[in-house]
Length: 149
Image (tube, rainbow, N blue to C red; front, top):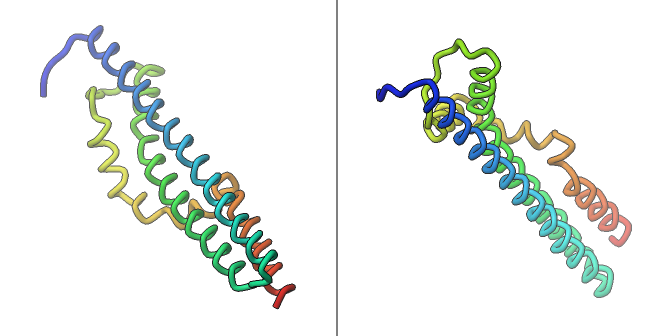
């Protein structure tokens, strides 16, 4: 362990904090892209199913939306593994008494991920901001499938 003075520690932790925030924001940007692809591909399949009178394409669209939903939930669990470090840095700045080592983004992420977040992604699927628009697409596709069949 390298010893650093308090001023350098504060500066390093501040930089680390903002780097982690930047990283977590990029996860949100990617989630928006996933939602866009889910809508685009599913609606394309819905349009083709209605135009060609092929209800099985609706099942394909629903399956695609399900896969995008699962991927987004997994992605959100990756993002969540960063929150432990964010909270530790915030607690240090708020209380200033706890011992904290700087530059621990990856090691904290790995410990948090292996402590249970790697299996938490199915629970993330129940969060409203993760469910939408995928659930709406799945319900619409299945409803149309049963109407057309």
